[in-house]
Amino acid sequence: MRVLIIGAGHAGGSAAAFLRQYGFDGPITLIGDEPIPPYQRPPLSKAWLKGEADADSLQLKDPTWWAETGCDLRLGQTITRIDRAAQTVTVDGETLPYDALVIATGARARRIDLPGADLDGVLFLRTAADAEALKPRLGAGRRLAVIGGGYVGLEAAASATALGGSAVVLEREARVLARVASEPLSAFYQAAHARRGVEILTGASVVGLEGDGSVEAVVLADGRRIACDTVLIGVGAIANTELAEAAGLDCRDGVMVDSAARTADAAIWAVGDVTRRPGGLFGGDIRFESVPNALEQAKQAAAAIAGRDQPAPEVPWFWSDQFDLKLQMAGLARDTDRQIIRGDPDSESFAVFHLQGDVIRCVEAVNAPPEFMGGRMMIGKQTPVDPAKLADPAVGMKAVAA
Image (cartoon, rainbow, N blue to C red):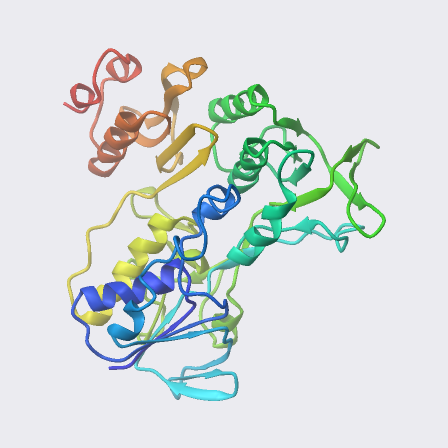
């Protein structure tokens, strides 16, 4: 059996690695459009910008691993067509056959149409090349304006401040993290960033960028001009579904897959940020953008191709590092009817639990590993809890679970 993987990012690279781990010994071809081998993306907005990591330290595997395990790693190449009937792909004019195809094309930064968007110093942060372009523009005397108050934008603002520069975050909604976190968590992060010198403006609608060749200011709808010398646009990502759509696969803001990461075509799987997958405990279907999701789906696809039993389903989780604040989230705050805050946000160690009745559906934990780990376990087991015990930090999480 010949396995061909489109996309040499975290998901695609992990799928190849799990195939070998699961005993698959057939040929694997892994094709990526970036010039470097599969690497970890989360540190790009943190360790990479601060000079604590580079392409070598973030690689998923030792550079020699690919050849030693018989993986044909092709970098800097672009797939232009999937022919499902012939079971081939076209890459740079060459036709390659497959018996099993894994689509791991990821997602790209969402662009916004603004006057001045083509000025020098207007950047995105999705790839190692993006991080390398942003890195020299941070530091003492430099001012970064971030359009969009999501996780990547807040992480970049924290890195810019840690490097001795200044940062302002411009969020169109009434609070940062409005689409991905609870109000208590948003309020905490706004205050925590402000205490550390980051300026955050909410309800800030950007209408243009100004500068003479290079960006010098962001213009808001109310007429304010926010001075800066670099702009980072962080307003979400778009799944790279074009290849899958052209091949006739079902795509709805993501390639539709089942719980084994398989598409409607029995010979094609899809993994990572490009997919929309079943919500499991949470119902419906969801497009997750996280490393844990990429790894889980890589395991699912690899197990199916290698003829192994499917791994046990996982509770979705996510993390974000900003300054000395480690956020860990598990589950989804869907169909919940109450919130319980455990601990004091002012202490910068607390957790927000979202419950449906007496069952935890989601936990957002800041510098609180026991709450995250205990909450994640109880979400998976759907363990009923005593809300009074959950709200009392003096009661250990093991006692809450009991």
